[in-house]
Length: 159
Length: 291
Ligand SMILES: Cc1cc2nc3c(=O)[nH]c(=O)nc-3n(C[C@H](O)[C@H](O)[C@H](O)COP(=O)(O)OP(=O)(O)OC[C@H]3O[C@@H](n4cnc5c(N)ncnc54)[C@H](O)[C@@H]3O)c2cc1C
Ligand code: FES
Ligand code: FES
Image (cartoon, rainbow over all chains, first blue to last red):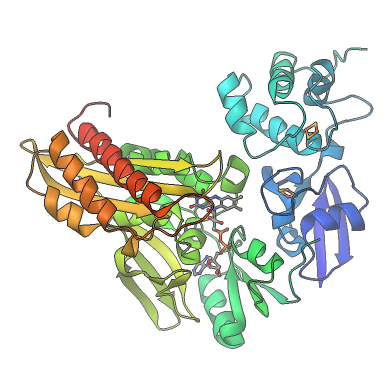
């Protein structure tokens, strides 16, 4: 079937099987491998992207369901060489080790901060509770999101 | 990599069209709402529909609103909508408490109330909520609409009254002024299905229980409820000994299965304790106290 999906502002029309999951469309058809593919069971959140502005687990969304809709992936966070505050926060606060959960974490965190610009630690922990990290123990991830909340302006990127 | 078996994809843009597509494709066709129960089952090849009819684009089926003396919830309302609904928060705290512990925020962005009820998983929390509140469910077919009691909706695990060419379109809840309600769940870890869960609502008149509902998930209570416990409490004071006896009767009504989540004895004990806590909290709220 033919699908037309807007990904990071760019429209893509492709011929796909109806059973193709969005995560594989993004990674294998569009080459956007920033979105990770982990548990494949809707648990880990590594595959989190935005569908019409809402974080979803793309291993449990059909590409066909996204046709005519807007998808945003981790690749869209950096604009013209300037990292999103969330990305900077993960850098500053050491919010990752192996990095596998990071793209999903950051897409969830970006949405959380758009909705709640000054979240409490509890709100952050609840907000990322659908994104699992096997490495960090979450402490630094929470700090990274707090850092982003405290440095909302992207222009002042640290060196 | 888990890949569903091949199927044909159709997108419905109205309820009528979805029903016509179901009619046209016969029993091998299946509706998909949030897809958060169905797609995992298809990936494991536990479900192999030949045609998938996507109902996510149906307009105006995601509402939560007051209609006269009832609250009406559209089948496509997502978990996140129920969690955030001011109408539900005002009338039935049970929704906020249940939704807060259903899956995780990202799954809640996608899963729908219609999908939850129609999945008819014995552990589905909203089935227990609807049983507790005495919800009525509106089912539509080409022939029109019919309304059934939530307490008769589940004809078995993963089976409901919704026929192959029908769809659930609405959940209706009676508004009971002064009702208090609550939900209690114990799970192995954040975001997991319940080991056991219980919901309750209570209406008090002159300090006595005038109306009461008990809902129970994950431990095999028939129709997600315990009528014996409700009958016992009606007309009584919600005192600790009475709540304890109601909880004992509710636990007796369960038929838990042994699995990784626990033994029969543990689950039955837990179910009784959660019924007691939910009733205690609902009664306190009905009495105007923070419970
Ligand atoms: C990781 C994870 C954790 C979860 N944890 C919990 C939990 O703790 N508690 C809990 O209660 N649930 C839990 N769930 C289940 C989740 O709540 C349900 O998957 C979801 O709400 C089902 O809704 P859906 O819209 O995704 O349904 P779908 O998957 O789209 O559909 C489910 C079934 O219902 C049918 N259907 C859907 N809509 C209709 C309709 N309007 N009329 C007729 N038939 C229809 C479909 O054909 C299908 O058979 C969890 C799910 C996941 C993935
Ligand atoms: S890969 Fe999608 S949730 Fe783990
Ligand atoms: S950094 Fe390794 S899983 Fe999170």
